[in-house]
Image (cartoon, rainbow over all chains, first blue to last red; front, side, top):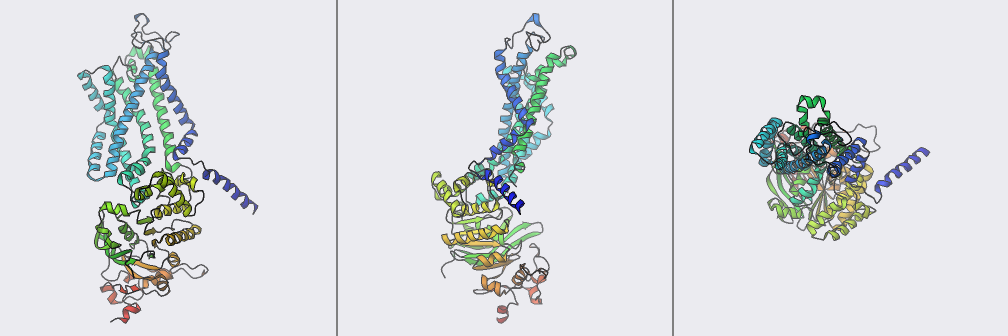
Length: 314
Length: 326
């Protein structure tokens, strides 16, 4: 008797906070879940620090990106050059940060472009259905069936022939990567839209007589935002990785513009590889840490945003 | 009697199935007076929901086909209306609530945002005024702390509370007809009675006709003035609720009443109608209930019994009325 009384009181206490005036939005709840995920938060912190470092770091460095020094070629790390110098006597630390800017920028820009493309086409295919859906999805299938690396190598080789300036090469790489990345995103979005479209609340919006534009933009698409965030995060990691591979092969970002991938090119030579690890270890570690961190963060975001995992939602 | 608010006239709907057309609704005729409460009762798959969805114009466009008949709303045939005009009626003069309140609300929008939408769409009020009206609606459906509920998300409320919100949303534009498709099936028994009470109260307050779709005869007995019993896509019996329940004419109605669990009667085994609902894609030539009926005769298997009668109608060759006629 007493125990039942006690338990109801406990229960009531547990219910009151959720019913109080502060009503946490789904975003609030997701952020709360993410905060209680140490690996994801650690990754987020690491990414923020790395990005800030890459952006701000070069201003504090005494060395210029392109400043070569014939007397200081291939020096091991020391007090003056923290991470040593390369075969032209350039400071590896400064180049690493500048390369980080380029690589992160390529990652973000590719993400924006491919997500925009993939989301738009995927949503269109899912919502319109019929012939639009068939055409878009066959196109996506076509792009996905072609192995991406050989295709990128061919495209990169063609770009080298066409003789673009080093800066515009960066944008070319972004476009190339985006064109290969969008089908995956489009498929995911389409699948999500197809299942959401059949949910009761979409029928309910129809029962209320809302316009189809309003149903699409206010009711359907906001429900795909969690998926979009997760996809976008993963896309950044993927783009950085592919860009590195391409640049490593000399077909992505080309010197003198530094990128983590083309800095790794030093590992191509046996002597550099064996005797001068400061040339290729730092960009390698940078790529590794960035991609791992983004993927862990992406996983954390998925756990946080997945409505099935959310507490209080059956 | 005045002109009915809604009248179904020989409505037939079929769906494309793997083995030919599935005739979900056949020759359904009944009407509903303004402010009246009508119950549609029957087993799963007997065409109750399809009847309601065709009224709202929400049948899946590719799969379904209206084979004939008309649905008149104040004299106007809803099946002939342009989609735009139909969208103006939906949520405005015609409203509907669903079985699962949890899934019928958008999880990423607050209740307030969702409640305001039909008001802005159909009444053309400003968002600010809509917010105030919506807050009032929440209190009208018996929920406290309306202001804070407006800022809540669906997952923060219980099923019963959400169903009240759904009702608030449905009645926000003062519809002339509210269709409630199994409104209490997904709810706790204790909450069911409250929701039904609320529906009855709002229907009375707003002079709103109520079309209650259910498989629960108890709900019908409490709520409905008129009852339509459907079986395998056809209306098999219709009439004032009290009469139909007290003196069922069709053997199927009798079966439904007999198979209701009665609290307190423990020892008796729960009765059930033998057999199953026939496949709607391959209906027999005669009465669809013939295989399960205890009064079946040769005539039942050769012809579909017509729905006859005036105030009370039944589709059975063996009902007292039918036998009295030549």
